[in-house]
Amino acid sequence: MRDVQLLPPTVVIPQTQRPEPRHPADVDWETGNKFLNGPFAPWHEETEAFDLPVIGKLPDDLAGALFRIANNPRFTPLDLERYHWWEGDGGVAATYIRDGKASFRMKWVMTDTMKVEVEAGEAIYPGFVNGADPRPLPPGVPPAKNVANTNVGIFADHLLVYFEGGLPTEMHPGNLDTKGAFDFNGGIDILCTAHHKLDPKTGDMLFFAAVGPNLTWYQADAQTGKVVDTFTFSMGCPAMVHDYIVSEHHAIFLISPTQFRIDRIMEGRPGVLWDLDAVPDGSRFAVLDRRTHEVTWYETGVMLAPTHFFNAYETPTGFVVDLHVIERLGNPATHADDPVSSHSWFPPAMAWRFTLDKASKKATNAMLSGIAGEFPKINDSFLGQQLRYGYFATTRDLSPLTMTDGMARYDFAAGQTLVVEGVDGLTSPSEPVFVQRRGATEENDGYLLSLWWNPATGLSELLVHDTVEFAREPLARVKLPVRVPFAFHGTWAGAEQLDSAIAAQDA
Image 1 (cartoon, rainbow, N blue to C red):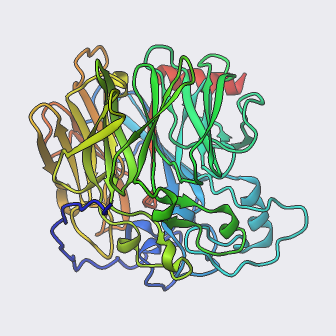
Image 2 (cartoon, rainbow, N blue to C red; image 1 turned 135 degrees about the vertical axis):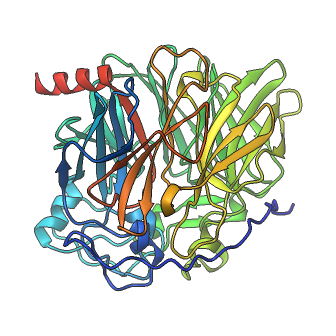
């Protein structure tokens, strides 16, 4: 058994420095920690603004809201040098678009644990990735922090913010006021994944919870929000399962050496470990038949971890699964209490295709794009079907300042990757979000929305690209009044879905 070897990207170290703070909300904690500087730097102000400046023209048929997570630590972390990007307090940045105009709101997600720290006026909870010396918690408070910082979107007229260490938190889709924890009408009791999928046929939410060695599958009804199906199976180890994918009838998980150790986290020690002994025969796919709850295992024979999935579809002989994989993810278990650098902990990921064969129960693999990247996205209307196009943010440079550096469109049929750079020095693009053009039937007919960081101003811009004529120059650049600290995921809500959710919350 040997570790899989991924092609190294070209190493380019940019000399760009973070601009001097230009606004009282622009925080500088005087640390060299990458995750507290540049595009990651906190922004300490809740903001709303209207009729934002637009360069170019917003499409007439683009109406709704882009909801994005803002990974925004509110108080100085207990250990500035050990602070990790995954630990920032959750905020939501919403850009509302209608009639060619844009407005904006950004607010923190006021979880119960954020209320504890706001009352104390300082950070209390230690980080869970690299650890920190824990402090005594006030009596009666939750034992672990719900940072609500991973994904956000509307489901069954509820705007939900997700974090894999606790229940989702509900916010008002219009004013972004926090409403409280959401448990799917009593259907879940501990946590759920931040990476749910929506069934293209029914709109039902398909999601899971990984707790220790067990993974529990859920399906929630699109109209009522109630859980209508659940099933639990053992992964064989406390694997960290962040993302997964569905085909037409199945749910597909990749169980890897990346382990999520709650016992260590509660001791203030690094809790995300790369432990080859956890899966001694290599990473394994678990394929759950959503109709029968039968679980089938497929061996890959390689040691790797998934980051995020493009898509999967069923064939007469098995499954095709497209995703980004990484050669290691987490602090090495061999010296788990000595955190490594960010690029050692989380090296660049590459897009691979795995073909799962029902007869042999083996998974073969081949690299798709040779461009390092992350945050793959598709037109979600085609989830579970064979499709042609996918998008992702590129991570070609091992930069000390940024993580992403361009936007790519991958053509599965041609095996071709087209990369566009940021205009006017913009960089550090967020995960792209595909919005299908109104009335469109073709898979790739739509718009790609993403947030970019402007090093010259220290602020963010929303770029709208045409997905058919995918070019560097966007259709529109919306100048945001803030920097949205670089974060993970987000979703688009069309005008009808947004209006319905607002009306339901205001009823």
